[in-house]
Amino acid sequence: MLKCPDNGRPGALNGKRVMPCFDLTGPEPRTGADTAEKLSAALKRPVTPITLTPSELAAMLLARGLPPTFAGDVAALAREVADGSLAATSTAVHDLTGRPARTFDQFLAANSQALHATFPAGL
Image 1 (cartoon, rainbow, N blue to C red):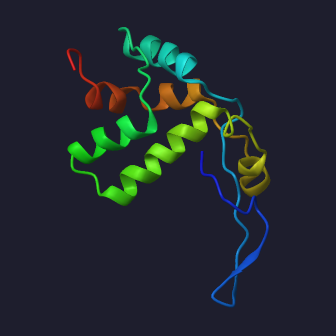
Image 2: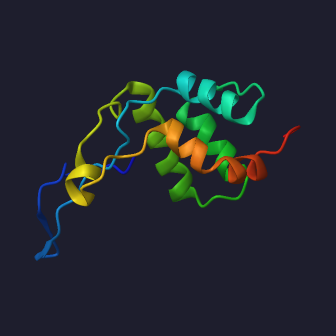
């Protein structure tokens, strides 16, 4: 999901008009639990979601070398996901492309080889 603070309304930046922003989502809302379930099926092994506070997540990302601003942004996004504020779906993909957005199952099927390479057994 790509989320914009202005919810698709055109605005201005430093006095210049900017293009509208669109919330690009899949056709179905996601939760950590159902995402883990679908990943488990795709990888053919258990995937268990973990719960971290935004501060714990930011600290973990910083410890792995991410820049502080990016780590803070990811932690803020995770907080919004946990709060459910990003659960809405939109028709923006279809509106912009004329094609429906892919489901998570379709994404997993199309990227199976890359998923197995990125998350090898024993990781």
